[in-house]
Amino acid sequence: MSTAHSVVPQSSQLTPLKIFQLLNAYQQTEALKAAIELDLFTQIGDGGASAAQIAAQIKADARGVRILCDYLVITGLLEKRGERYLPTPESQMFLSKRSPAYIGAATQFLCTPIHCAHFGKLAEAVRRGGAAQDESASTAPDNPMWIEFARGMASLRVPSAAYIAELLGASSGEPWKVLDIAASHGIFGITIAQRNPKARIVGVDWPNVLEVTKENAAKAGVSDRYSTIPGSAFDVDFGSGYDVVLLTAFLHHFDIPTNEKLLRKIYAALKPGGRVATLEFIPNEDRISPPHAAGFSLTMLANTPAGDAYTFKELEQMFRHAGFSSSELRENPAGIDQVIISKK
Image 1 (tube, rainbow, N blue to C red):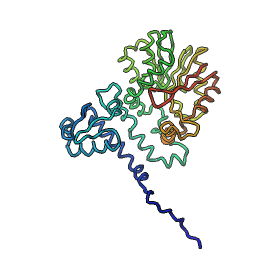
Image 2: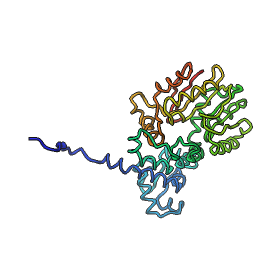
Image 3: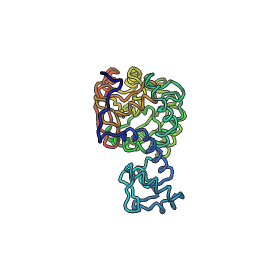
Image 4: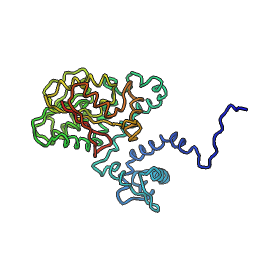
């Protein structure tokens, strides 16, 4: 005799807890956003404070502060000793405005309503194989979300920019001509210009984004060696004679044929022996590790028509098809992504 339904094994250890945690994961995002908005981590200070003390500093309700702080202890961003809340090493470094490594401004881009709306249509993106090609897709021309990216993500990229500048040998003082594709905040090119007084940087991006780039170049004191080319990297004329091309967090937005087309254009713009520094989230060949890099594929599925997180094998093949002689993968000790140095 058969039954219509399979029997679910009974186990005292089997609960739906993980499923509930995943369904409620948005609450962690909103709790962190609220704490950053309230500047809670800065106000707690290195020595910690009670809920009442924090509430007085941020002009909030003590009960509300206590509940939020307890939740942040549960998520691992605060510690609790008696009635006092203390920062963890992570929150002290990255979420306190007293720290030069503060990245709280990244919420401007990472938590933008456009991203949330795209993930709200994830099932549709899965059916289609990518996000709809409309004005909200991250690859749409002049998408205003990239202004938020430029303003919010600069501080997050400072360590990686320093690592790439070191990897390329910027401090050698050679008279470099550097092309920064999708320059955004400009930090990668600016860092090279700061370390090499003979380097001249050319930033390519949408006109509205380049206003932020130029602001940052001026603040860094390198405006006289920083010029811009407004427009799409696929359409504008790069010119030629570049020693270095910076290709940071860009290739994942597009499919492989589109990337190879761009790489051939870059190859033509480089001097013989010129190099490309590519920064990407690069998953292992199994595509499920490391978790952050592998999981980035889902971000691209939700936000772009055909983007992906590519393995090193795929990226190396793209560069080889474009004419590059070699590509070397480097671990990035300063970030959660990796660097590839490709040579013409």
